[in-house]
Image (cartoon, one colour):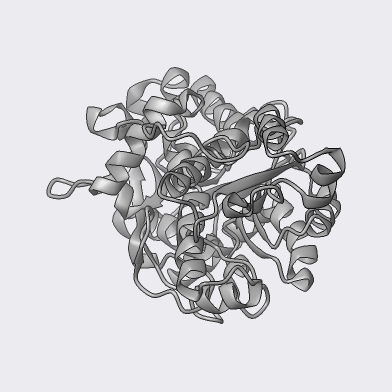
Length: 416
């Protein structure tokens, strides 16, 4: 990015492999075809041996474009780490696999990476995909971070090698429900939920909080990810007479469909929900006044209030996204909310603290992380708790504030 130093031995700054440069370098070092196959990427130059990390994301399939920008934070982290000398002197190299966002493909991908000697993986994205992946990475003892908000993903007893560097569904469900009931004084709450593991878990968390507050949802509408539109589901909630909605929508096409349906029906109830609501495309789908009472769960580190502003690290991150990653334009909040930036930086801290790349030792170091100041909040792990972010670092933010110059494409104003 801003560093002019060329990455070593066939690596691009984002950790991907430049095969031509690798082969040219290998040729200068006198490594033949047999040497390349037997020694691998860095066998010819031990001093610059990359630290290979599995990188699982969809590059093909229906959700490829929706998920692509969620890995930008990880690319920025790799560039920052490599520019600073890598991890224990070794640059990070991404070994990328296309999962097509299909849960069924995850076990084979994990086995392929494992057979290649990969002990650390970033991805996949999506709760259903993550659960499928963890079924194979857990017994393989592969250290991993996925983009999945399900509360069980942070259970260090159940998934001892998985680290959830995000908030979880229980936290989101509680914050979203309490705001509508306690702050806005609403009683007739409806839920719009995508038919995924995330959607099911978030709805269950919302129900649990509503029950504590003496309420049950008036109506719950569950839609399939491949629904051609959401008019029927939105219309059913409107007809049920709800006065507030909790929306568990986690991808661009469905969020656009939901707000387009509301615009068509000229019905704009107060809404709280997932950070999938923070999409600049919404400003083109509904009139500005319709977004006045729309709020999404977000990290306090990415918000401003009348008296506080995001910190220097967060501002620097926002500038890098705007300058170097045009594909993130309009999706800045989901870009920043992704776990891969913090995961890679805290992984570096753990490896260098332990002075080892051995997975068991790295796991031990990660389990002892306390008070690490990440992009999204204060990261704490214990052997039992692998959810990095506590509920005190989470709040609701205004969707409409994305039009404010202070947003910088990433930040939002905290809900009042």
